[in-house]
Length: 391
Image (cartoon, rainbow, N blue to C red; front, side, top):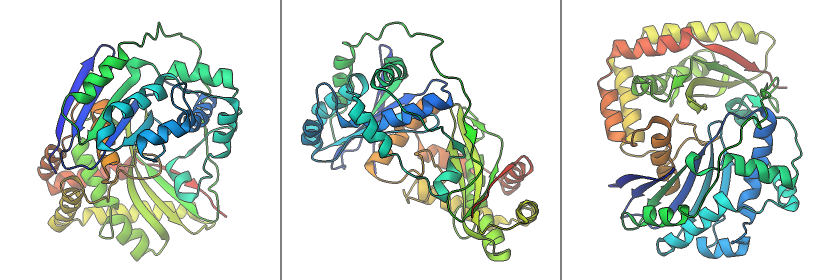
């Protein structure tokens, strides 16, 4: 699918277009880079994110749904950003951008909406708990403090607008610029945010134990990112991966096993996640898994590399939704217009470069078998095991 990508820097804000003439709709998204927040403020922001789409000064919920054709706007947080999404029909570009402006500037955070959002927070299952190993505290947020935190986080210089789908190039940027010119945020205050660190989870909900082999974080500008992602394909994506062969087939210990790339404020964290039955000898099992994985890596052949390249091509070029990029919370990036639009903006926001899957894939094709083994071995020799016991 051919897409026209354009970035405009407009004053202190940025607008990014991802034009797909073949699309049958428009996805309008605001990606807000988070400042460094402590555990209490992140917990409060999670509730605020649930309340934002319920109502704004200009758009009660019913009016929003009239613009979107019945699809609710949504807002969510990940460790690195707050994301708002407004999906609209192709003839509602300007109206949809109007809704987005209202969401980022004028959300009505009533106590009723905040209390409802707190009740709607999802209860983590074993996999989402493994993906999010930090536990936020239980908090109550009052309307006045919610409004203050909302305005502290949502500032024009932190926002990247990404609009994807069927519309004329330049129209989204022009409409966003027209609206943003009216926004005077003033000087940012300092010394306000909570600085308490989030606590590590000490147990997994339910009966399943998870093992998390997390390696050294990757910076957003890491020049070796394509080769490291390719190593994740070889290590833990699909039934032909090392994780599947070793932990599922050879040892018979896992229910589920995947390599994932989780977001951090400054980049990403490569991880090998394994869900298994609780046992008393889990520490020894972690050592056995690691030793067997290192042994498996040493036996990789050109066929191993070809399989990883094939998996990368399926995702990057053919857009098969089988992706280790878990940068949307509990789900990998998929192939919907919403997800494609998000990834185009997210990559620009994180790396400063346009999302170019063809160029990334071409870089992966240059990775030799020896380089692939070296990257994978490096991940296993620097891993930091985390076990969340279930049961």
